[in-house]
Amino acid sequence: MQSLNKVREFMRRDRVFDFLVPEPLPVVDVSHDVLLYVESLSVSFDGFKALNNLNLYIGDGELRCLIGANGAGKTTLMDVITGKTRPDTGMVYLGQRHNLLDKTEAEIATLGVGRKFQKPTVFQQHTVFENLELSLRMSKAILASIFYRMNSEQYDRIAEVLKIIGLTEHSHQLAGALSHGQKQWLEIGMLLVSDPRLLLVDEPVAGMTPQETEHTAELLTSLAGERTVVVVEHDMAFVRSIAKKVTVLHQGSVLAEGSMDDIQNNPDVIDVYLGESQ
Ligand SMILES: Nc1ncnc2c1ncn2[C@@H]1O[C@H](COP(=O)(O)OP(=O)(O)O)[C@@H](O)[C@H]1O
Ligand SMILES: [Mg+2]
Image 1 (tube, protein in one colour):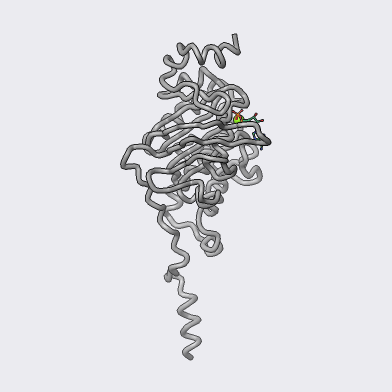
Image 2 (cartoon, rainbow, N blue to C red):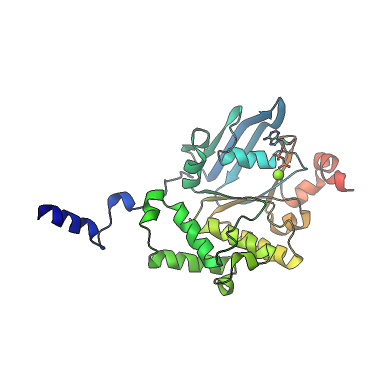
């Protein structure tokens, strides 16, 4: 009888086991208004320095654009921040407290660092809504996801994200049937469901129509403030349309930093980067 009671206790639907309750997001200390610290960062591949003593500070809530010719080290920098590539030397901190270099990719994601790769990787055979639901599930502990049932709070979160990315009306459409631009927004949405602190976005407007590009500019601008957004992009008109502060990378180091006007009038930048397209 006692064991039956135990089983009953275990089967109670209203009982939430401690180990199933998702961990609260760890506190990121931004008391100095800086969310991301990158100092003296170097990465070499077979002796070639992809990053060379790079220093970069991203303010909390900032929208920062990262530009630079092909091979400047932009993607490598994102790889280091997200734990995919280990640097030779240097330091990367999220806020004052979290040393990202001693964390795994999964731990860094749990700290609230979300990354959008160049190519959209949505689940084509699932609807827009299901894609968001799946990524919400995956952002929870794996154990929890086995027992996972969506509650109204999570449903609201998905509805909210659908609105932000402008896909509310497409919520039941298969992701495979979306336009290229819509797929990119969906993928940004898949990061947003878990409420990231820092969003790294690599070449978001490549292949987009002018209207899609404009919508993406609005979307990324609206995301900054509440969260921090770092955008890598080649399209200079796009960068001009969203940028507050731009960092130019060149041969793995910061060549210049400032407003778009500062950058475009900087003789070093004109020399090595903007000069290229003339
Ligand atoms: N895994 C790797 N192995 C060898 N070389 C690499 C690797 N990743 C990047 N590189 C090299 O490092 C340099 C910087 O690359 P990357 O960060 O992709 O530049 P960007 O994104 O600015 O175009 C390039 O010369 C590239 O060929
Ligand atoms: Mg790249």
